[in-house]
Image (cartoon, rainbow, N blue to C red; front, side, top):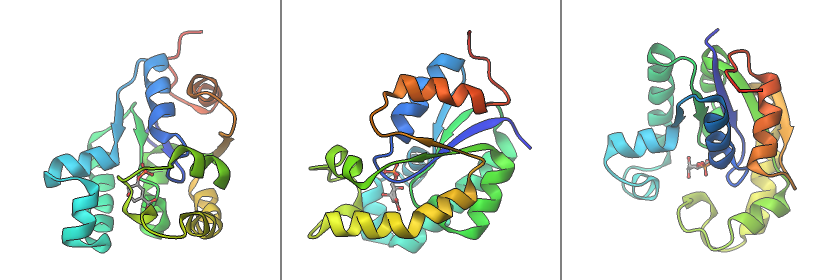
Length: 175
Ligand code: S3P
């Protein structure tokens, strides 16, 4: 298995901010699958959803994972909230390194993403209902994909970064 540290979890769980804190603390590079997909497509995730559809975005997620598996080691990798939903992607994630599920409560997601316009799945009416339904469906799949779980509510990115050090085989973190 490779020695990447991979963060999975729902939108608003803090994958990016915790990833940034941990990358800084451990001196390792941070990669983000959403950013890699946007750079390759030359457009935002919202535009990919609108112009090409969600299935095309999901195919791009699998392609990015395969590329990371071929090319990347010793990095901190934050992945889009829906990436672990596909069984194939869960298998690829497990080979890519230590997978940590950042588990978040719906109330925290709603607070953090209030007014957000960048997540196509959370636009429109009845956002709270959708967040609760998506979380109920996805949490068991995140559990299946993960080697470790960290509850994020009420914690700072730095606190969570310290928790991650305990899970990380390749930690270069200064004590
Ligand atoms: C998605 C999560 C988003 C992004 C896309 C779809 C999802 O990433 O990949 O909007 O299906 O949960 P973040 O989890 O980084 O917000």
